[in-house]
Amino acid sequence: LFNMDPFLPPRHATFFFAKGNLYARDEASLNGVFIRIKSEVELFHWDMFRIGQQLMRFEEMSQTRAEIGGSGDGTVVMGSPMRGAWGRLSSMVAIETVGNVWPLRKAEQIVGRERGDILFPQDGFISGSHCRVGTRDGRFFLSDLGSTNGTYLRVKGEAQLVDGDLLLLGQQLFRV
Image 1 (spheres, rainbow, N blue to C red):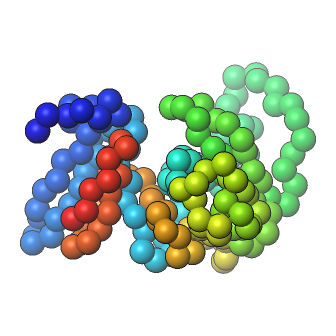
Image 2 (cartoon, rainbow, N blue to C red; image 1 turned 90 degrees about the vertical axis):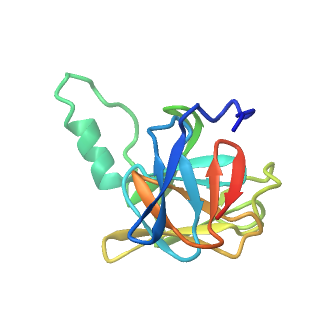
């Protein structure tokens, strides 16, 4: 297959069958393999997801504080603490380059183009109310709110696929 997408390396993902099921494995690609979520999924520290043209990274505040405070290299951290925040979302503008950062303080926060707590009015691929990020019982969750273009969670390692699943590899959309 001739690859015309500059965002796809020669070996981006591997698809394989095991025990009668189809799987996708991310081959340590820079841009990742993203699968469209169909229901609420659990989020973990540094999970990444895509909505519209936005690449977002979730950070659990207790993990972030440990990373900042535990470096031991003598770095002095300056700035205001995010009191009352259980997490934060970072907009990734390039590989390992953070753009805007939003603290997550309410139990549920809506991300959208027109309505919600975190807005992207310039992104026409994001629905008015697109997705929800929330916390309960010390765990963290992401759910799509019936958006037109979907919410895609980055695959860590490999993921089982089923008929009809939608995958983003680079800027290419694939249907199983």
